[in-house]
Length: 90
Image 1 (cartoon, one colour):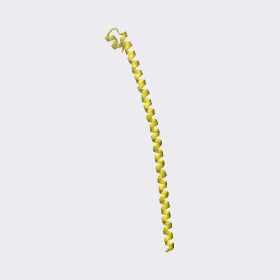
Image 2: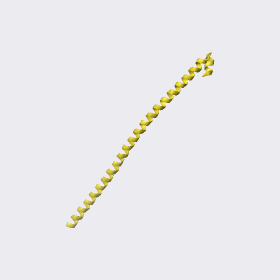
Image 3: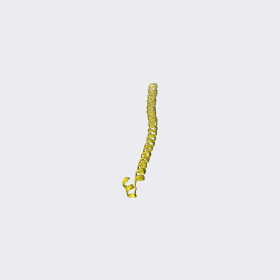
Image 4: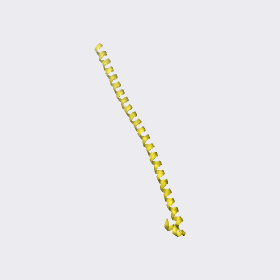
């Protein structure tokens, strides 16, 4: 009976050790996933800030381009002697 109890106790300890190892492995996997999610969030933040900066720059360039078009159109219309001449100048 003593041998049976000893072997049963050893078996339970092994099972407990296996379960603990599995939990540690799962915790390590979850920590890696959380770390990766944190890295992804930081990279996403950088991308978002860069995208906003690029959109702002693009807006500025389009605004300048339209200002130049309006200026050139204004010059063309001012030099025209009639509506038909202004239409052709544009």
